[in-house]
Length: 288
Image (tube, rainbow, N blue to C red; front, top):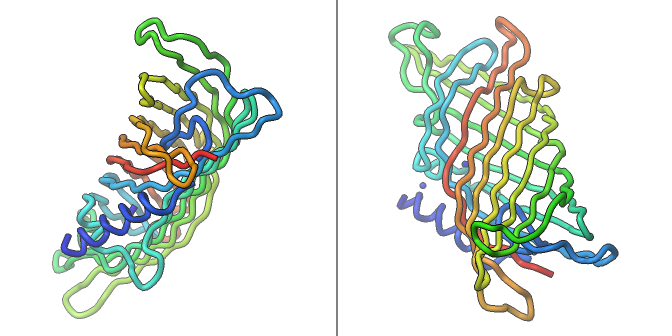
């Protein structure tokens, strides 16, 4: 989640990853078809997806009791990816056997030295405070299962469709350093946290004919077990690409929104992350 001269480099990096580093499973959230009935029990199918997510971030956060307003567009994120290491990675994998699916989604981003990522909220620093420089590393790992509860013909589209119930956990890791420049000195705040949010939801896999399909998923989680609340909505349009080296390959575009409201501690020990991440996704899915 997270330059244009350097923005263009960042987008090119993501596009190359999307086009050249893929393998699939059926009914993947971020690409993948198989909107009809599940394969027979005992027959495993797999998909692997690499994708790019270009998000806007909005909300607020607090580090050791210091509050910041988070308002970042894709240029603020892509423009400050840390190229000294792997700047970002996003992938989705699913294995399916009959009506049962097991899936995993990984989002990693490392942002360095961004002054467009966050700013002090009023009252947090003296009036002479300058910009806030943020170093932000985030890992989101989703793991869970899906169970197909219905398949048949959608009377609206006259094509096959399937509905899955999904459930699992979403692991979050964040490592944040914020430096606010004052008249003669810096005020630094840092924090590192980990938590896991359980979630439940549903997924629609709709065949559109001629190799095209639509996947819509929504879930809700947190429930106070990790964050206070978390939710996600994802919609992707998928189309079949030419067969590559004997493997079926799909392309897709869509939109993803992920919100979380997490906090721990109080006063000078408070860490808070109440942010909505939303924006387009683009990628490819390999089926094998």
